[in-house]
Length: 418
Image 1 (cartoon, one colour):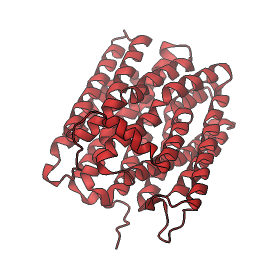
Image 2: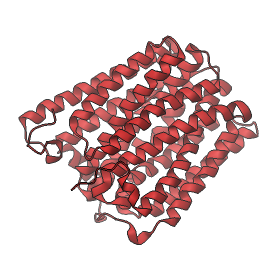
Image 3: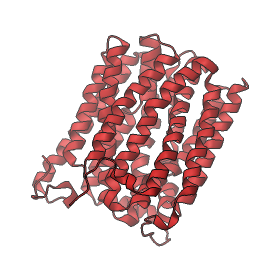
């Protein structure tokens, strides 16, 4: 009988230790994201949304540029050791940004430089952590562990921004960066406490030239993966620009301070946590869920764009967070479960690059639109992205009915998930 308990992955000691450390570190990370955006938007510029967009672009651009190295590293090297290195570097970068800010010497170009540094390290860290989940629990519990990871990440997203808003008002952004630097001690400690003999390492491919080319070739021969990755590109490039959406709506439409911005960011995370918990109860996601979640994303972004006050906006953000998290978790689990273990690192690196690597294109566009047409029009870009992604998913479902697609996309009776 299959195990459908919500927190079933927590039966593993290694996963429990990892989850505690990751939660603490993720709270600090979300605190820094809010503080960084607020610093750029209200301290270093006069409400310049384009500057926020450039900061985001620099932070996520390396996901795409470093793809040949990040996927190779996730597939060929000891993931636990590499995560130790990447997390330590992220902590040092947070420490540096905090020091220049609290001493009063911070400038916009310095924030840009630190954002680029964070992006370069995160490009390696993200696929490592995504695939490391399998090492902690094994394939039988992978879908549940991915969903619980998202729950933890978004619980931190709910707590971190609210705390950051209060701290920014009380002591300034610089101390928020320093607190984030200290939070990395938790995840580094958890990695050191893991029982290595209880890990579930996957087979590693042989070292040879052309590994990345094989990864692209593998995806190109899989119409299911191509469709999912295209949906991810549309949502990641034009939909997941919440730093621009929420900051500009909060400051320029609802005329709020740092506390309101932090609380609105936390409202988005309330929906995300709900979506993650629902995902954790599912044993296996299905294609229809991708269509429904992207459609919901588009509709809820539209409601947020039309919100007459911050209270309605907060409710719309909760719905947006629920839809976005459902889609991201389902797509991650589907891709991992349908990819050969020896290719998983490269395919997940490609997923991360497509999802986050599109941000350097989308974030400046959304920021420019917020500056010249207004924040509400900027949010309409998210609406369009959700509807286009839903259309792609609908086409994928129709093709499923006409072909024999991979078994994971079909019901036990052999029909599509429609």
